[in-house]
Structures are given as structure tokens and as C-alpha cells.
Picture 1 (cartoon, rainbow, N blue to C red):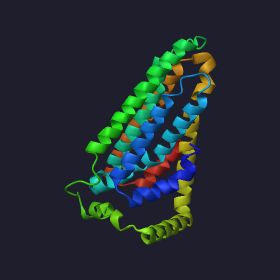
Picture 2: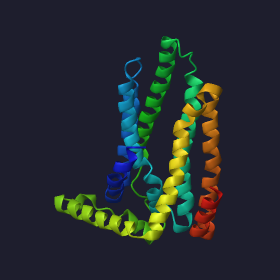
Picture 3: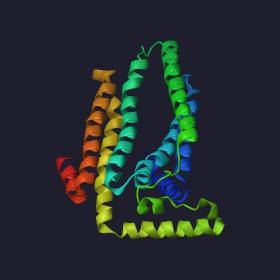
Picture 4: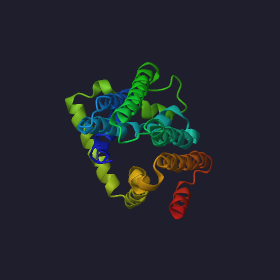
Length: 263
């Protein structure tokens, strides 16, 4: 989570000023690299290697989490953007759910037998490395920047990113415009309030997810993974329903108020 705070700003600029495929390749490539680095962290004194691999993968999330709304705005008509975004978020959260579920099934211990735990971690890390590398290859060969036929003119305008014209002067101008946009947003009280409320809610969710193991390890052991996956799956249902409701009724403020009320 610490990597997201400083890197989200350059990541947002990259998403706005380069093609979708470049961002997807960079994000999936960094994710695969982080997973492959962790394959070297099987010894009892190699936690620092695991930490480096995890940090590389964490940097990739700043790009991956930016993609669903951008893809939805370019590839889908206006009446499907919210649903498409929710499905993109669904994919990310499904990965989180699998992250809760799969490791406890593979790394079963006992923790006192190092060789057995190392073999189990090897299966986990090698499997994760293979999957993330396969995803990188699929993105390379199948992912496209924009559709052959746009749903509407707005989607066409949002896809017009002239990366070949971004010379040194163009990059500086782009940074300047980006900084001005951030300043305007920071002066918008409604945006700041929405950012704080959304950020606090998501922060609590990630805090619970991250600390779930420490909270219940002594009493529940491997059941912690299933607690985590149930927590995520319950939210996935709301995400899909929320996207469909927003596309149908366009009641964004009412939906936000209801969500905040129930939270």
C-alpha cells in the first residue's frame, strides 16, 4: 500500500498519455517480474529477496488498478461504462480472493519442518510465476489499445493519445497540464470529500485484509484464508449490482450516499 501513494500520480499521467496496451504490458510485466524474483526467496535468510519481489509487484498495482475505468470509457458505450468498470474491478478482487484461498491450501506446514515448508513455498511461488508470466504473454499478443469500431464519438476522443508527438517539450507541457488538473481537483470540495470517504473505506478494507492473519492466526490457522475469500466474494456481488444500477438509473450521488450509510 505504501508504494501506491507516491506512484499513483505518475501512473495516472502514464495512463492518460500512453496507449492502454503499453500500460497493460508494463503492469503485467512488473507483476510477472516480481513473482519470478520471489521464486529465489526460498531460504530462511532470503526474506529480503521476497520483499524486493513483492515491492516490484506492488508497484505494478498502480498501473493495473488504473485500467478498468479507462478501458470501459474507450471500449464501451456510455450506458455500459459503469457495468464494464465494475467487471474490471471484479477481476482484480477475484485475484485478491484467490490470494486468500490458494496459499493456505498449498503451504500447510508444519512450520517446524523447514524442508517441507520450503518445498510447499516452491510450488506456490513457481506456480504464481508461471501464471503471471502467461498473463504477460497473453497481454502482449491479444491486448489492443482501442476497438476497431468505437461505440460513440466520446470513446473515440478518449482514445486519441498522440504518443508519437510527445517530444521533450510536449512531455513538459503534458506534466504542466496534469499538475493544473490536480490543483483544480484539490480545490473542488465535493471531489475532496468523495476522495476522503472513498479512501477511508478502501483503507479500512485493505487494513483488515492485510492484518487478518495476525488477528486470528493463533485460533483459526488455515481458516483465515477462507475468511478472507468470503469477505471479498461478498463485495463482488455488490460491485456487479452497483455497476448495473448506475448504468440503468444514473443515480451516482444517491448510490454513494447509500453505500456510505450502510458502511
